[in-house]
Length: 244
Image (cartoon, rainbow, N blue to C red):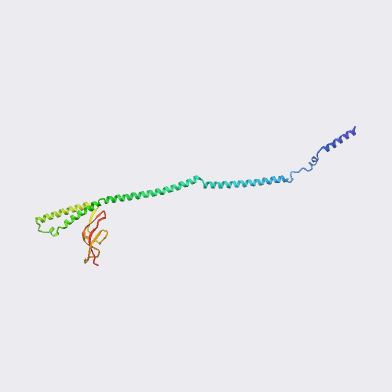
């Protein structure tokens, strides 16, 4: 009995050895340790991960640069900023136009004021021109009375009447000239003070040499002149000295 049992055990052992795979026997002998080098696949995966991380960072930097450039372009092409600049220009233009309009309006006011004052000052110019002829006739009537008759010691009835008429005309002339002067009309006689000839105020009707007087001196007034508010209404007709 014992030899059969042993034979059976040996057969079972040999069958078990045959049925077991070869790799299972070598597996415990060639199992890699934790300190073994990485395989080629692991190297490729690690390198791919490194490249992918680098490319990701590069993409992030590119995206940041693009976003900055887009922000700058957006700021440069911002419609709100453009509209604000346009409004500022419009405001400057309107302000300049406003200042010009105000200056023009003030100039117009000053010019209108001067025109009104001139119209008021010279409103009687035409009337004054027609009136000076009457004043001249009155002056001629007074000049027709000789001085010796006014200063005569013996006065007759006719002479008294003449003196009374003269005094009345003289009084009328004085009142008339005062009234005209009140309204800006004045009469001037350049020969009274021996003025120099002024072509703006005088009209020389003749020239003659005279001893003891300088050239271009007015020595005779043929017709008195008139001024209206400082402006020559009628030039005086005078005689001028000319020795040379």
